[in-house]
Picture (cartoon, rainbow, N blue to C red):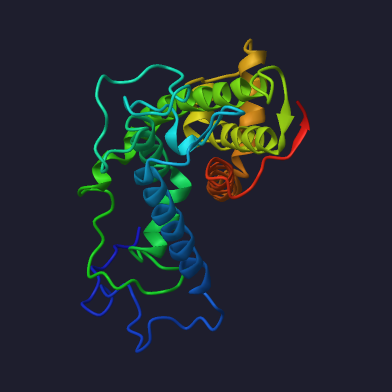
Length: 272
């Protein structure tokens, strides 16, 4: 056996010393830039709407925007608090959906895809493959606020409950048409389209896939779990797409409800 000689000082330098940040000639910066713009736009819009405390409920058709569900302030508009409220009115800086919004934000913040997206786009760690990052050293997820990333599996259960609440909101609106009975309008379609895609994003989560089959040594004798794991695995390949699509549908749903509630547009009814 040939003995391995210790590396010389020159061999210890594992990275090439280049005078430029990267030798790539393609538009490697475009993806991170679009990610920054997209996530920033959503966060600004969502924060503004959550603190507006108005135009979130259409009493005629029981449309409730997901940004205010469940509505928990004592000042919630009559009929919009499907699960009751706290005994006091919230100040302007406290969103009416004070429980669900932070949990959903935490679910997305710790999501495996979003972690990749904002690590590259905002923290440039790294910005792209074969692009030197500006940081002097790599610390991984060993510092605040990244220490809590593994809580994603628990935020997943909270997201499941909130998805059920959103489903209830969409279903409830079907039975409160113009005359108090069953009815369908454009708003109902938007609400159901949004909640369907939210379910797709939630169930395609890596944590959901792990729950279905991650702890099993073999699927033998467990055909139901194998089938569920297979379906979720197929959805998981599109998790990134659902992550972005649902940001768009959340904004579209909220904006539509706000416009109808404010009287800017009228909900088109197909019947009742």
